Length: 292
Image (cartoon, rainbow, N blue to C red; front, top):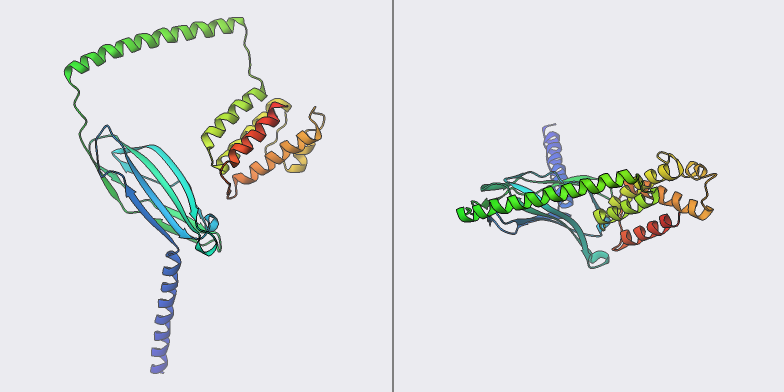
C-alpha cells in the first residue's frame, strides 16, 4: 500500500510539472519589450515610451483588449499611436504590434511609468492571457527660469494679444448678429453628413473598426434627419421596408442598407483591413450621399 501511495504522489508531481511546462511554452508564443527614448528630459521637452509585442504568426493570431490602462506620474500623454506590421510569410511570418506614447512633463522631479497590463485572447482557442511591462522612471529637470526683462516683454505681448482677441470676438459677435437678423440658414442633412464624414475619416485614419463605428452612428442620424427613418435596431429586411415611399432608387436603398448592416457588424467583431481601405470606403460613402 505504501509503495502504491508513493507511486501516485510521484505521478502527480510529474503531471504537474508537465502542465507547468506546457503553460510556459504557450506563454512564450508572444513576447513584450519596452523602451524609453530619453531617461532624463528637460521640463520643456518630451520623451517617447514604446511597447512592442512580437509573435510568430499572422496579425490574426491574437486579439488585444483596448484601450490599455496606463498611469504616468509627473507626465501626461501628448500623443499616442498604435500600429501592427508583419514580415515574412507562411510558417516564417513574424508580427510586431507597437504602442507609442509621447510623454510631456507636468512637473520637475522623478516621473514614473507604472507597469502596464496587456490582455489578449488567442484566435485559435480563445484562451486569455496577460503580459505586464516593467515600471520605468524619467528624471525631469527644473523649468528654465524666465528673465525679468523677458517677463516684462511677455506681459506686454499678452496685453496686445488680449486686445486683438477682444476685437476679433466683437467682430464675430457683430457678424453673427447680422446673420441672425438676415434669417437663419440651417445646414441640410446631406451637407451635415458629408462634413461629419470628413471629420470621421480624419479621426479614424486607417482604423477600420473605429471608422465603421462612427459611420453607423452617422448614417442613423442622417436617415432620421433626411427621411424620418428610425434605423437603430432594425434588421436588414425591416430597414429596406422603411424606405418604401421614398424618392430613392432600389440600388441606392440597397447600398445604404448594406453600408448600415456591415458597419453595425464591424462595431462588434474584429476587423482586419488593408492600407487604404478606410479611404476607399469613405470615398464610396461620400459619392453615394452626394447624389441623394
